[in-house]
Image (tube, one colour):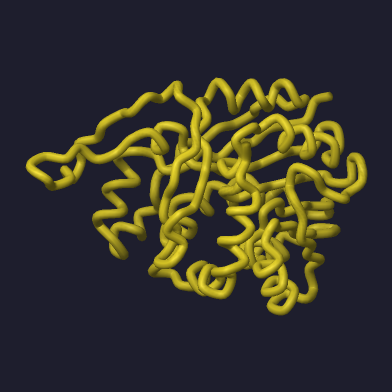
Length: 250
């Protein structure tokens, strides 16, 4: 079962620190130089004059960046009350709401486009989440989201003589879908996410009325090499995230 209480507690407890983490270009390099370029590529030409929802908006930093593409209406929703309070304070021109992504208060077919950055992997069962997205998205509307790459979730570095090898990896049981713990920043050291196979992700979308139009396995921007050669090499050797563009067809 999805541990929503744990996720909310961690983000509420460290809301200020996480907001500062997102603002810091040195610490936020995975978002800024690996994942966000793919989202921007898909979003920038689709937002103008559209009603858009940022589902899992954090403290609104990326939401705010999309105002330059002139949406008709832009709304952010996040599970964390702490992050939403920061978003409302920092970006008062945008509507922000606290709530659960799999059970929102939005109306049926309210949005032209819904996007979600690195939130989907917090759900052990994708069907309720995708079903809710389908409910509040207009027919032929687009759902664009990123999440941890399924292979990244089940790989670890090979340990030789007590030291982890720089590039050799071990693939664990890919087909065993279960929760795993990971570290987010300096203080959020026990985050919980859930591994899903590509089969589960694609079939869950299909069962809730979506077809996948594009899927990207992320690689870093060249600028990351100057910031961290180790992280650049790591994200070039194995994909950290997937970015999916799906369309609601029924």
